[in-house]
Image (cartoon, rainbow, N blue to C red; front, side, top):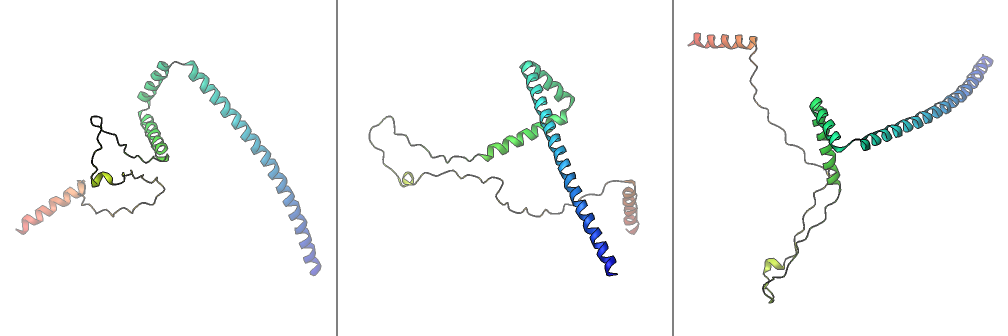
Length: 173
């Protein structure tokens, strides 16, 4: 019994080593194929970008405008979605740059050379504009909405029920 157990253990060990070597070989082959696929995809993308740039350079601005108008007429939903996406991206881009603190500039009066008297308000330090935090700051939780009373739709079953309720109230009077 012990000999049988030792033979089984040895066979499993050898098969396990063989399987792990085969798995390593398969991983190498898969890695090579994946690298080749990425390389081909890069080449295809490079070619398509070059073709698009040459096509754009070959067309005039008026032709691009006409094609854009035709596209917007043919696919208005895609155009609106594209404009909304572009606006969102532009907004995010503009909000990502920090704003400079703007300080008011003081100018000397042009008509008189005498110094002007300063009041308590003018002696205060100039106010700086507060910079709003970007979207990274935690936001307040929204207040729970109140349940709105909705009217049941006038389906045939509801209309019958309403008529029956009216008839019952008339009969009870």
